[in-house]
Image 1 (cartoon, helix red, strand yellow):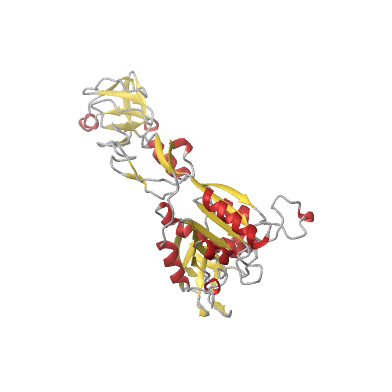
Image 2 (cartoon, one colour):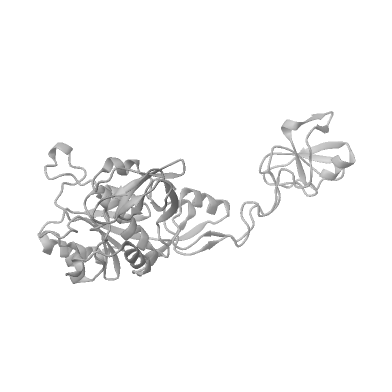
Length: 394
């Protein structure tokens, strides 16, 4: 049997996907505010405590908690400013503060504004107070040496916010260039529906959307048969860090993608002994990752997680696949000739299998992830590993 027709068991294919190395993309240093959705190219550690000095955690009055414990009358002597500069307070003194304002030296607690009032310049309160109450101590948000991002982490909005809070100004990120090659004979996505006699490509926008961390270029449909495909892939391997092919990945007379990859480079995963991943594959050209995807939406999306997002570990240091264990919400009997992948929706902490089909985009739109189910009967409550679909959450 030709290598291009072989199907690997799922665990073998996954081990290859996570174990192969590819040419590392170029790096660049950018302002943190411009790093959204980029991939960190190196570890980022906090260089300081944040805050560096105690801050008020509530609007109110900064006091010495021992004064209240002793029953000392407390006089309000001023107001703290965001820049600080308030002199140290002494016994029986308080300073009005806003949330986030520096605590005056000597103060160790905040009396909340809503639980107090000022009468004749003196503070009256019903608030219970103790040392550290409603105060952000040094290092409350970030401690010096904390790891803020690892190499290979996607800088989500939440992580960018953390980096900015931690005082990071610039971050080293990868500049990942990806070329999506439409190998199947379809119309471009922008073609009006009624004019798309050959069928309209609905997969390349899906795959591009899974790569917000890359500069994505879409080429094709590729003309010129096998020769045109060879020229297109050769150019993509010279100008891109990742090549993704869509279509012509099966075993028909026109399905030459895997043969071309094998001829020009290496075919690492020829296919999966699992539906709907079956015709997905992984290769390498000029040291660059080649993700080989079928042209149907469910097959393409699930295969992309296995041969694009999972092998990112060998490109930038970390797989971009997220997985979790869930219980099946209902009985499932897999009657197909081989083990299969089911799309699932997570409801009440359980995985609900959705209707099976390689091109059921409506089910893909509902799904939160997908699970591997071997042939045979699976009972409700059985624990299954779910690969969470990228783009369905952060």
